[in-house]
Length: 273
Image (tube, rainbow, N blue to C red):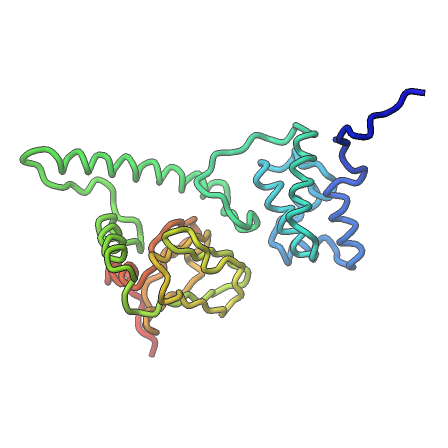
């Protein structure tokens, strides 16, 4: 009889895939698939694909991993262990679509904006870079002055103003006076607040009415979210304009008191009676 070398690693996948484990855990907890869709904001059709283990039908690997992580957290499972198993499973399947190059990597793919909006954001970023290069060229030629080649984005500080604020904060070692607070206007809005070094101040899906105050000692605080229109902002209790009035991905946007107050005054919301 041929002896098997027990020291060789077993590279076979479990008989029960990640999708089947999620389905069994959901059924054990008495949840309908519609309940999961409502709680996680993951489309029902994608949940059905995940439970079948047909991850190749999802738009990209990012969606497969991100949706699985969100689903596992909702069920109270070990999301890290499941996503690690999923990566192994995908490596063996080898049929999931190639990654799309997008301008962001959402912490919660259930909050990814529509594909058309993502493409629009990517094209806008390319145009902004091209405009900045053209502006630099015109301002460095003898006898020429700065030219406005790209219109300012709605409710955003001009690039020079943002740079000045960031440099001022770095030089002083603090962002100055002014308590900045963000209040969610809708349920389940994903957001990440972090400082200039990339340290997270808060990352979660905020509930409607939930408020977060930026720590006074945060150096160069910034925001990343796909729903800037769903946050009311105040500085020392006084309202300032939203970062945007539409659903669009914003990332690495300065949200210190100086940066927010430096934005155009005409975008300020009317004072409450």
